[in-house]
Amino acid sequence: MLLYAIIFLSGAAILALELLASRVMTPYFGVSLYIWTGILSITLISLALGYWAGGKLAQRTGAGVAKLTQLFALMPALAALGIAAACLAYPFTYAPLASFHLVLGAFVAALVLLFVPLVTASAMNPLLVAICLEGERRGAAGDAGAGKVFFVSTIGSVVGVFATAFLLIPFVSNFSALLIVALVLALLTVLAAAARPQIAGRGTVATVGVIAAVAAGALLAGADAYTGRQGPYTYGGVKWQVEGSYGSLFGTVKVLRSEAAPDGRFLRLYFQDGLTQNMVDSQNRSSSFYTYALEALARTYQPKMHGALVLGLGAGMVPMRLAALGVPVEVVDIDPAAPRVAERYFGFSKRNIVVHQADARTFVQRCDGSFDVAVVDLFNGDGTPDYLVTRQFFGDLKRCLARGGVAVFNTFADLEHPEHYAHFLATLKSELPHLVLYRPSSGGATHVNSFVVAAAAPLPAPASITFDYLPTQHDRPLWEMLSGPMSVTAAHLKGGHIITDARNPAAHDLAQMQLTYRKTVVQAMPAPMLLN
Image 1: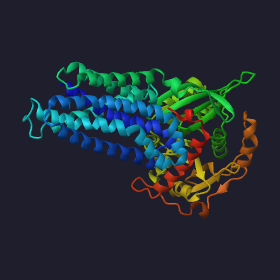
Image 2: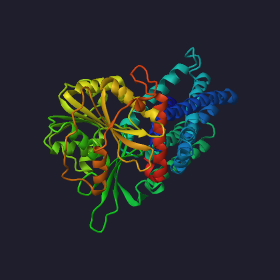
Image 3: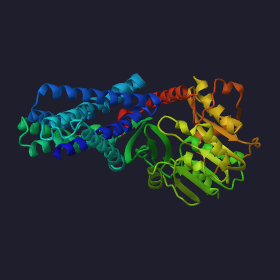
């Protein structure tokens, strides 16, 4: 029974490591198709090699339960040592790997983090089958117990996913979560040595287990000191300190606070997986251009709006500005951490605002057509998830809008590869055919904010608006942008394909655009700032 308990927990560790690897790697390598290809391929290769190696070890040891049990018991400790070594390495190697090459770097990064622990943990399955075959259960099953072994291990993997998602990720850093998994694995080896007196080399097994447990425990205790993840960081010529950190399956949110000026003023960053969602001053006023651009465009095209839908909460600046005008606002965000962060650190108030924790795609499917404006500001990792840029999504969004309503999008465009952005415009135009594009002066940048206003009916003439507060640095750029709307022409749509739920001919181009953005993030950010 003890050995099955160990195989259950090692199975849990395997899937926990895979899930944590995705969270660890995202700030450095993003969430594109290529990155997941690296994680999944390294995982499967490691498991395959582990199963093969475990089978070979079982064959070479001969018919000796004591020796087989020794090898079986050593594997969790070896996996724990592999995790500890990876934790020592990745905070200092992932940023250079990402700067070198995002795709190749992601494969190497997955190899560093997953290879040793997954090979050793998966080798336990064939070893336990061999123990069953050689021990007192011999002949009890036609498959030598292999079915039961892999059943227990797989059920453990399922439990590992849930435990990681609901017990580790929301409450501890990914670095610490990895070490907790390592500590559990090391203690399995110690437990096996203590509970199985007939095990070969019992003292050696116990010693290796203790060494692994001490290594994992020491790193866990000194996690923040080792990684420097609490800061301070120097970014943009400003020193930043981590003020709060919130984990969820949708990304790790960090709140960074700048060093106070002599007059006591400071800035806060809403930072999620390498993406700066917003910058807010000490009076809870946005310092980010895009929030004023979205508000201005909504008000310009719907000066008498009676209801607004905001998809994507962030720090909550846009919905609060609209609500302050007396407009009833409904906000949709899938991340349960977002409202907590916005309220605690960014002065977000729900006055005149209803917040829905839901997936934007699901929410728009049940819209009732009551919104004059829909503000779409949906980002995860490097860009908008693919299923939120399909024709079906835009069709559902259109049904959310009242007669004459408009949708305002915050997007990024790669000016060096306009055909990548053309897919978004072509798909949007298929459902909301009347488009106008706004871009602030790029200042020579090639990956730039682009704002799109879209509607089912011809757009009205832009109305004149005023702002009761606008940061000095955004004053001129905003009015210049508003004065220069660009019609979406055939040149903007050249090479663009309509993306549907059933077919995404633009997957490669979208992934390339996301890689371009991630490259700029990694090169601009201090490495410890990217560490979750």
